[in-house]
Structures are given as C-alpha cells and as structure tokens.
Length: 449
View 1 (cartoon, rainbow, N blue to C red):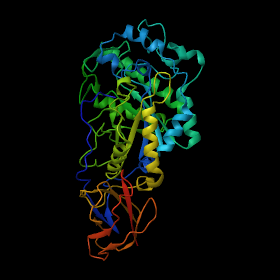
View 2: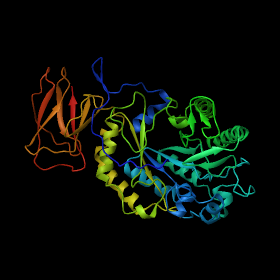
View 3: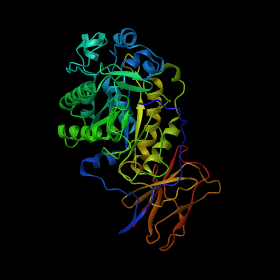
View 4: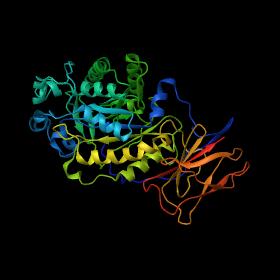
C-alpha cells in the first residue's frame, strides 16, 4: 500500500444520489455484473499484509522510507524472515468470527519478495543468482510449506473467498531503481521485459491458487499516453493487464489499480477514506487498524476501537460499498493481540447485526441524518443509530407511499411503537428507551408490507 499522512475521519455526509424505480426508491445507482454479485453481497473482507517487512517490524514501506539499500535489506531483513508460526486456520477463524466473507493477502508487495515459489527467472535477489521468494531465499524454505496455499485451503474449507494482492512496481527487480516513492525503469527494453515477466508471475498465481480476486497496487507511475522511464506505466498497459488477467480466469475480480484514474477494472478502491458521494459503480475502501499495513512494532498500542471500525463498516455499507479491513501479522507469522481484539469486538456486533450489512444497498433516502444512517435490503430498511435520542423519540424517514408492517430492534426482536405510520407521510416518530441498546451502533428494522 502507499503510505498515507491523512488523518482518519468518519464521513457521515450526503449519500449517493437516489433515483425512482418501480415499487420504491432505487438506492444503488449502478448495476452489478453476475460475476460480482457474491462480492457485493458479502460487503466485508480481510486484507493481510505479510512479507519480509513483517520480520523487520517497521511497516511495509521501511525499505524506501529508511533508505535501506537493496543488498542490506535482503541480507538483514528478507534473509531472516522465517514465519514458522503462520497459522492459516487461526487467521480464517478470526476472519469468520468478525463476519468477514473474503480474504486478500499480499502475494508480492513493493519489496519484491514473492510469497510463493516463483519460477520466473528475472525475479532474483541483488546478486542475480538466487530467486527472491519465500521458499528459495529465506530459512522458511526448508519447511517446504506454502503459506498462500495453506490460506487458500483454509478459506475453501470455511466457505470464504480467497484473493491475492500484487504490486506493479518492484523495488528489487533489476529493471527498476527506487525513484522517490516509486520506481524508475532502466530502459524501455527493461520495461517491456518486466511487464512480460510480471504477466508470467500472475499466470503462476492464477494457475496455482485460483483466486477469486486479483488486487493490484503500485500503479503510481502511470500516465495516459506514451511511457517515459519515470512514468512508465500507462492507461494502455492497465487495459492490457486487465484483459490478460481475465483471459486467465474470466470470473476473477480485478480492482481499478491496474491503472487508476481511468475507470478501469471491476471496482474502485479508495484507500483509508470513504467518499462523500458513493461512486457510480461497485467500490471498496481498504483500511488498516492502526495506521500501518505491514506489522509495525511502535503502533501496536494504537489500534482503532472496534466501535470506530464498526461505524466505518456501516458508513461504507450505507453507500453500497465494501469494507476491506487489514491485519499485519508479525514476522513469525502470528496474529497481533490488537488485531484479534478488534476482530472479536466487530464479530460480537456482526453476529447480531450482520443482516443489516450483508446483501444490502445504500441509504434509500439520500440525506444522512444527524443520528446515524440507513441501509436497505428487500422490504427492510435498517436504521443505524449512533447518536441516541435523549427524549425517547427518534424521527426517521419512511417511504412516502408505503406503510410499515412492523418496527423492531434487530438484536433482540423487541418491537418499537411508531407514530405517523400512514401512506403519504415521509417521516415517523419512534418511541425508544432512554437506555442505549448498543453503544456501537443500534440497528432498528423498519419492515414494510
């Protein structure tokens, strides 16, 4: 991931523009292709940043930020990476506990280490002699294990979709040198050869692991037209990469970062942010729990509260989006205590309230109320209340030409009485208790006839 200096903020503002549809208000302004329906229903996934940087514990951008040479990084960091305690079943257990429906793990980050046993010859270490992969460059290779396959198998067993992340830039590859935050190509011939070899690695990944998602990153050297050595990735390259991946597996989902900014890929993916207005096509925001993607020791006491994360998830769902929440395992492969605590907390809420997230579309009323937001599914509108009423009354929007069948708390099923439930009315007043049912997010179901 690209490092970010933005301060996290929860943007509870205008939702996506609504349109009228037969039988009610259309709350999702885009159509969903058949191969994406599972993804838009699932809404919530786990991101995993895991690589040699996990051993170093300074975050996934340490090599570039700290100005570590390729040789030193590989000798002192990558060559010592030995995640023997990696436990795919435990990771999947926590993902499922949190209510996550799919997982995306880094197969190759910007540092260039392949997390699988690649056979593409140009992806070697600084000497040009040893393959720069988890299996061939690190002590872990002696175990004969394949962490990507272990995770894929655990996901399949648990009914969770499996996806892979791949960085387009590569700080290690002989074709490139670090240029500021990104990379510069040595020559146009090197660029051509690298793109060819990158495709060969992607074929390995699709053939071996059959991912449901291919999540690209590292496309920042992009430009619209002809490439230069510094701006070496183009819109045409992005189109070609998308077409190529689809040729390997037609149903695979590919994000916009094949070359961002040109509406390519199957879905948009803003990073650590929630758009004020929802995009007009499928979208997903990715978030870290503590301002780091890869494991960073000095941020282990800086995790966001699970209340905060739950409310972000709800905000994203209210705009018909997906939420991809990251964990960064330690160098030995173990999950951090902070990530486990956060996932348990989210799971406690999702266990009772997940139906207000899964397979929902966004806020059907357009405007975002001061007390929270809405999601919708079928005949149900879910009222998400984060600011509880002190006078035991909560005024909510309703469909003008429909009558409510019943109103109740999602967690307990307890009925809530309402005033003004008549056709032609656009608002009703709910009679609520003084005590807040759930301080993270109280969900009230408005079920229509």
